[in-house]
Structures are given as C-alpha cells and as structure tokens.
Image 1 (cartoon, rainbow over the protein chains, first blue to last red):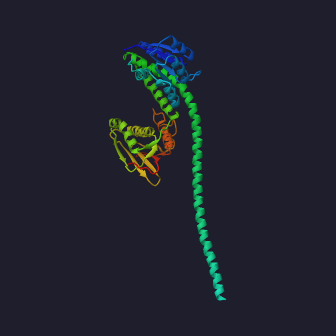
Image 2 (tube, rainbow over the protein chains, first blue to last red):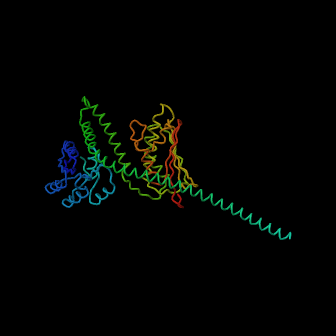
Image 3 (cartoon, rainbow over the protein chains, first blue to last red):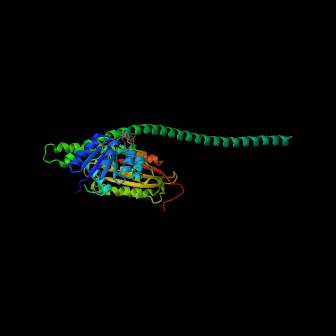
Length: 123
Length: 284
C-alpha cells in the first residue's frame, strides 16, 4: 500500500484532526490548512497526492479556493467535502476540475472510497 | 275580430314560450358558470394553500440547510471516531460493546441527517417522457432480494396501456422504493407465520388523464389518527424511523404534478399515487 500525502483544507478543526488521527494512524501524511492563505502556502511549498477541500468556508467559498489552488497545482486531484448537497456548487466545482465529492458526515471508509474513485489508489 | 284576438294570443304565447326557453337556457348557462366559478375558487384555494406551504417549506429548508451543515461537522467526528475505534479495538475489550452501541446509534443519526439533507436540498428534477411501468419494475428489482429474505409474497400487475409520464425516472424510482421499503417494514410487524403479501399495480385512468400506481400490503395498518400526519416531515411511528421517507415521497410526487394518498385499516395499507399523462403520446 502506498502512503499518501494528503492536504485537508477545512476551517473546522475537528475535520482536520479527524483526518490526522485516523488516516495518520494508517501511515498517511496529513497537512491541514484552515483557510485560503494556508492552503496556498501548502501547495506552493509541498507536493500532495490528493486534497480534500470543504465546499463552504466562512471567509472563502470552496469553489474560489479550488480555483486558486488549481491555478498553482493544476494536476492536484481535489475532492470537495460538503455538509449538505449543493448540486449547483458541485457542478461548478466539477467544471473547475474537482474529481469527487465527499458528503459530511463521513468515516474512514468513505475517505478510502473517495481516494479510490479519485486517483485509483487502494489505501 | 276573433282572428285578430287569436293572432294576439298566439304572439303572446310565442313570446312566453320564447321567454321560457330563454330562461331555461340562461338558467343552464348560469348554473354552468356557477360550477366553473366554484371549481376556479376551489383551485385558487388549493393553490393558495400550496403557496403558503411552499413558502413555509422554503424558510424551513433554508434554516435547516444551515443547521445541517453545522451538525454534520461534529457528527463526522463522533461517528467517524467511533467507527475507527471499533475497527481497531480488541473485541474482548470491556469497551467493545459500548462502542458498538455508540456506533449503531451514531449511524442512526448519520443516516437521519442524510435523509434530511435529501428532503431539504434543492433537487434538480430532470423530466423526460418515461415509461412508468419500467420505473416500477426497476424499483422492485432493486429490492427483490430483501423481499425474498423477509419472506414477503409479492405480485406486480401492470397495465400496459398506461401512457408515458413526464417525469424524473430516478426520483420516481426513489418514491416507489420508499413505499416498498415501508410496506416491508409494516409486514415485518406481522406475527410469526402470518402471511405477508404486497401487491404493486398500475392503472390507466383515461378519464382523468393520469396513471394510478397502487402499493398494497396486508400489514397491521396505520392507526386512523395517524393517517393524516404520515406525510408530515419528522412524523414517525417507528422506533428507529426518521419520519422523512414519506415526506420526501409526498414532495417528489407533488413536484410531478401528482398526488399521493393513503388508506389503511387493520387488514392492511394502500398507498395510491396519481401522476398526470404526457398529452397525446402513448406507450408503444
């Protein structure tokens, strides 16, 4: 099994911690960014295998963050996370290159499934 | 002189007869207009109720969407961690059983949230001409294994003459599946050994230009006082029910310009869905 470098972009600390504690436990390297500035810093300084990004953050719309992240790393596979389903937003994110959507609440198995669907990796 | 009098009487009689006929015509026209007016008032009242309901629903939906977004964060942590702990925990641990209960209960909350999200989210309905019988078949097919496991005898009687419906096949399939699942749950409450049967049928109601789809089970039935409330969101008689399934069915059928109703007694329950036809076109 390949260990992944995963970027989590979410203003909610609890979500970043969840990735860190669970996926980190299974050997993956987790970096958490709580806002756009930190997300951009992270993608400028490191290479990631996949990113999970919240669709709704208080300061920046997820779609806007996606646009800016993709401008720096166009090849980074990004899975959007959403508390509830917004068809329009999902479609917009899809057009901007998001490769999947993870519905909150989710669990480890859902993350694994999203990774498999997005980059074809079993983790 | 007599001839003049006779002519006057004749004219008078003719006028009277003409007046009488006109009066009958006017009366008939008046009655027709009155009926039309009554029907229009009835339609207007129904539209007004719908508007008020949709206004309320819109406000509730907006509020719920925000709340759901907030709730989904802690539930991800609670449910996600409990699942993670259960998976990595020694089954002989003292805490294994409580963790399993937490897992089960948090899954119930997660599931309810997912249903609620489905209920309030803005659904994109993609309508096309669809063969409603094919949609019914697909819904039943997806649940066939479960019907067998639960030892439910089922039958489908579909009327091939039902014309095309203008609707969203996926959403209607979801409605039909919800009703079958509901029937299965009701039949599950039957005493051990009692026959459990379910009948799904479609009919062509030519007179009212609609397809009628019926889901009938011989379960214990729904209490009379609950029958008015079963399509209300969050109303449930099940211990683990969210009260969202039938509310969702109601909304989806309404969005297709149709109606859903229920009749129930101690011999079973009948759900009836009516969906308007696509004009002229027919199922080949």
